[in-house]
Length: 195
Image (tube, rainbow, N blue to C red; front, side, top):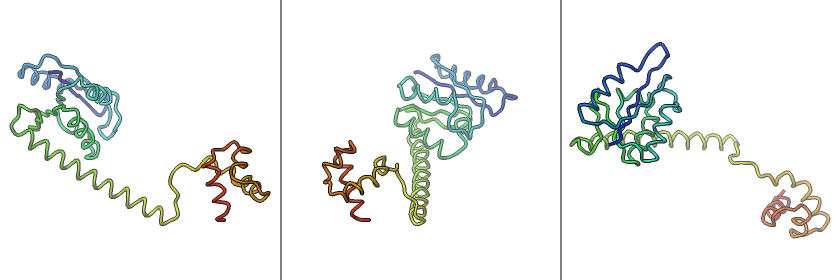
């Protein structure tokens, strides 16, 4: 098995030594010799961390079978971030093992499926809450008159299209003259007509 040890401390006044010793001993007791360590010295509230990002890249490439961490809060402090990580681990069939907290989602653990289902249910609940908040915010913004999406690059041609249309040009002629796609020109002409 390819085992990844994830170690994190919040400040450079701390070290990952005690975490590393405990996790290495745990892996040795289980007979896991093929281990690689990933570490960070930064707040757990940060979603992007050099060590964690490298770990997740290896997860996506299929180079990791299990992740062993000292405590769950070493991976992340927010439920949303943990939910995202657990979801990605599940999708890539990577076990999460936190010896200190009795979490082991590997296939060799009889309670693994229960733990994984509970973690996934919490993750899904958090995603639903986030989605509802986002949708509520979008509805409120639209009610205030906000417009979403990229502004069309062709809108800058609207005054010229209006002038050409008033001069009697058809859509094809306007499109050729402004070197615009026919469909975009047709939309601009329609906008001129509705104003």
